[in-house]
Length: 120
Image 1 (cartoon, helix red, strand yellow):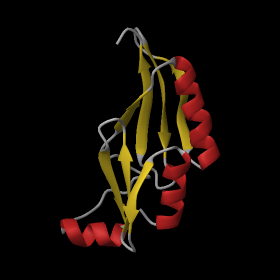
Image 2: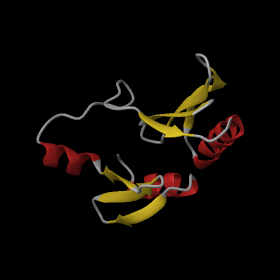
Image 3: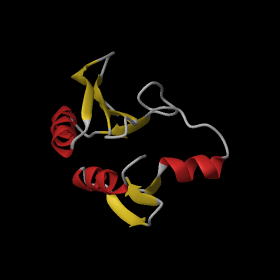
């Protein structure tokens, strides 16, 4: 990540629960079980892991999935992502039997799925 302020603003606008920040990272709690997501500045992360970091504009290291409760919630997430400054990679659509969702990238090009699974 390259901009703490921008990242904090983006995820706060999406409704992620702030979990503190410092001059090196911003952190959020996600979901009912409060999964912790830290977003470190790129230089800090590179020093900590003592290795190379994938350029998120060119490749994915991981793809997170956010579960929605309905198709309407998927559509609302897509609107919120755009309003907050994210980029829609694939618009909300049906894919596979009982699946509806979309893919987006945050301002640092980290990729996410948001989807609703009918019947689950």
